Length: 407
Image (cartoon, rainbow, N blue to C red):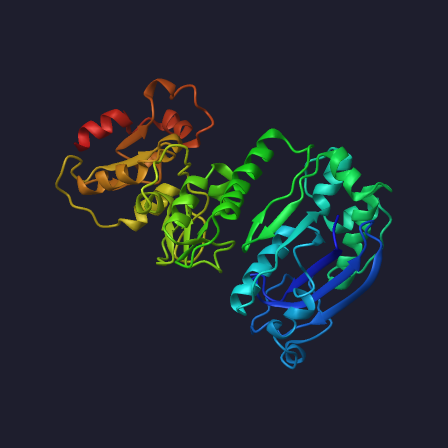
């Protein structure tokens, strides 16, 4: 079935930068996952700052790493042995796939194409569970002893756990019996692997993501600007319509934000970066209809990277406002349901242009805007509605009334 089976693991010197690999471990095996050979490579991470967690104790110092070659010098030994006929086994492997993507971008390496399996998926298939497990806990289940965070040891343990999951079955028979879908890494992007025990909701998210991979595989990559569509978008909705327009315009779809020229995201930050554009901006740029897309922000941060609420973001992004206009200096707070509307940013700008301000706290606002006033007493999951019902200082208004006021 496969010409070669490899288990692979990387250690990062700085987890903020997925290309800062300082140590790599590789194990070679046959299709029964029996180990035949292994090696590790210590690498200059090409970065000064260590950021790898307090429990990460490497057996070398930065001064030792600086004497080593950078990843480009070792790429043939590590990635060069991987080909289209290779099956790569990893644990929590999406992190390692992102490392491969960013390393290839940084060192101008052509990304390899291969199939892959994740030990979490294999274990979930056998156990019927759906959660994520540490390599240590899976090792304990299968009696595998190893030294954690030594990549050669981690790769060996990953292989041993995978072998334990097979329970003596052939790989072909195992995949068929447990409904395991093998992952693929090709054209620099990922088709995720999954198994039959996953919930319908989790499968739907993976299939949304994989729809973009399938499209790229069918149409091929262009040589124009590359776009990364944030995973929070591709998991929540089928973004293949947007990806198709990008490809047909001569662009490319990237596998990570680092490797992309442009990042399409629902995330918001007060620290401006021209590389990042909103989903709505991207849909407008490529003339893609809004239907079927989720515009809810996944992460919202201030200029220092601290998480803040959406209304806090807008209240700080638009500090200055005119006192004249329909709102005449009044402040407006929104329910969480109103924030999820695709036209929410238009509503906010309407408030600002009409002399109002955005208030992050309901109890300090003049107006509280909800989707539907009749649903207010039913929707206790929205903390702002609870705050309104408790205080009732703000004037309640629905979206229709707000739009009428702003028109």
